Image (tube, rainbow, N blue to C red; front, side, top):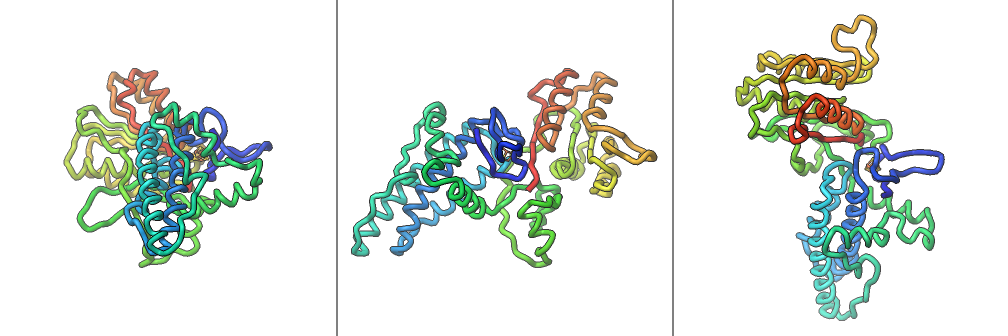
Length: 352
Ligand code: SF4
């Protein structure tokens, strides 16, 4: 695989980009390749729609599909390779529709339609293995030997600009007044972070689409719920705990919330409020490198989780959200303690 769609991308003296069996965010090679193919087919849709629009013919549904396709390829929105096989077939149908639109609009406007090549003529295979065999035709670096790295870089820059969106988890619960609460870390090189830090002001309008994810509490299970969160990964945990509070769900719940230093702590007031409304909620605030007088857990949330799992026979449902390394360590500790892999729910994130 090769991916450099986010700033968490792997950097070394040899260059920039996640190349190997998995990216830094946990994205696997198949998903990465299929995302490239989906974007390649969207490029083909765009070639036709752009020309058709110049002749006064538009397809709003195809426009919306491209936005949706872009969204699915964001850093960690969707790692389900099978879903991308379906989306690529759908994209090919929209591309054929866009082609027909253009080829009808051109003679009606007194011109001869161009015969397009490249992405416009790309015929995606119908199944996963066929698509993966086509991956090099759609890769980020496609044509680099001819057009050069600068053009490849510019092409990616334009694509990132067109995507222009970031994915965040909701921290609050569904409500009728339309309030959305997010916990967003300001990342020094993040595009949206820069907007929030330097330009955002009250009453700005921002287009929000969602919710898109499936990281929610499993309501079919009666087991205790334990939540492991690194940094802003606490957002979906607050959402699930608040939902439990609203429903009066009195089952045992534990939150292991981790930051690196005490200066990074946040959302403690929200956690305290939840402890008041959920009497069976225990919260362990883990600071990796605390001051000597830190009253709670000093160390990683996985060490805290490990210690509590070792105390008793409880086998809870485990929810974990944070960087890929935290996800992997939590899964390993939970499996080691006898938690069935079906009872571990995870959501990796990358800064944006
Ligand atoms: S999205 Fe994942 S695989 Fe791609 S550059 Fe970012 S961390 Fe690497």
